[in-house]
Length: 355
Picture (cartoon, rainbow, N blue to C red):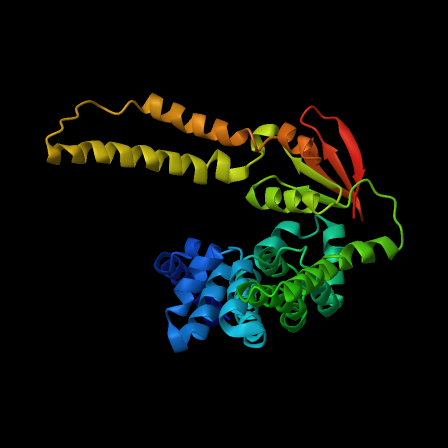
């Protein structure tokens, strides 16, 4: 048992190290552009399919958008081979992401939720019992974020076989539409381009149609997102733009943006920018430019606050309300199958219903 845990731990560490290395070496941001990605991949000649699949796997695990690569697959390899390569790469990447959260995230979730949220446990068992059907549905509809599902499903009790088969077969229609679109665009075949767009619209319409004809249930919201960090904001904004009545909940206006805005990415990068500027000043001595003086840390802290303030203009409750999204500030608690109670900091309680 200890040996198995050790193997999993070593495997996880090797995966993280491999991802860090590949992300640095591949410069994945260039692959978010269809033209640049096509140029880069085509340079590998006969090995282009292999490099394409590896790149797709890395981008999937790195939580980066993979749609541009679907278009590239159609332009470089044609629809049939393009779909084959996309399905192979996406399925492998999704499986690795699932394994990672299942191995390292699921034990933590079980420990934290044990006996605390019976309704979550109910849904967990439901996913386990109907895993294949649920995965096929989630993969078939392009409205649900592919990368987010990879990691999220690893936290549930869904069987690996159901997850794998649901992913493998569920992504084929969407992959075909995107790859066909890429090939049609590359060949400037506007008739086929229209067909590809209509196919994507048809797939995206599955959920609204299903939702309309299912048993009606009184609700205030279609989607309730708890936590307005980077992931929560992306999901809530996407679902809101897709036409779903969305509620976003976080503890306070200052919490919106999560660790990235308040403690991690933004402050650290602002500080790194200052550090690089100071270093450039010191290096200027090589060219006969003398710069003296100490760094005023109070001004540095103020610079970081100014950067956060600038970003926070578009990451606060008032901004999202203008976009048509409902935002409630407070602590969310599950009180029923489809019910959430938001306890404001002042102590006011309000019940909400959602799907």
